[in-house]
Image (cartoon, rainbow, N blue to C red):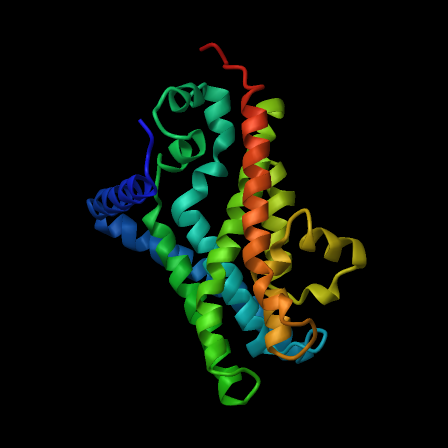
Length: 269
């Protein structure tokens, strides 16, 4: 039976409610875990703020401007962790043979994998990112560096950032069909690029800037459009680019996934 898009949304809504009910059965654990994730993001930003307090600017970007970048990346990561973190856990499915169970279900395998878990404790990271990025953006508006309409654009930009993260994670997970052991690859394809993306991309050497604009296009999750909004460079295409980049990245990652899936060999356990 052919599935309609509404069927997927209904299932995700059901999973989100189920995940919340499951977590709320242990309210203290849910609260402590959420607070811990919020504090982890806050501590990282405090360290960044300390650096900027000492040097004032990083390649012409001050604390408020970097806060916008940091918030955009954090919200993108929060959305990814909320809905798609099982892509980061794909090695365990390959090693244990649990992926076989996903293959026989009447859903596309990527969706079947994502549907295994919706982690509502990641809402704290998402909200913290909105708070940090929003505070920086409002400060920039008040001093005239940003126009008020830019806030609406920045509010939806993390959707593209999250889509780029899903594409990168899917592409990395797809390597597991050949390599099986892939956990270490995420350091280079996701964690390091996300860390790099909270700073102005212009501070990095040319080869790294190239990677962040192409192979792992995290530059489009924040730096490219914000750089233009702040009048630091770029053109009107900088505002439009994140969407086609995210769509292209998802398409390429999914093609790699389907290709790799044809090479999948079960553990036989």
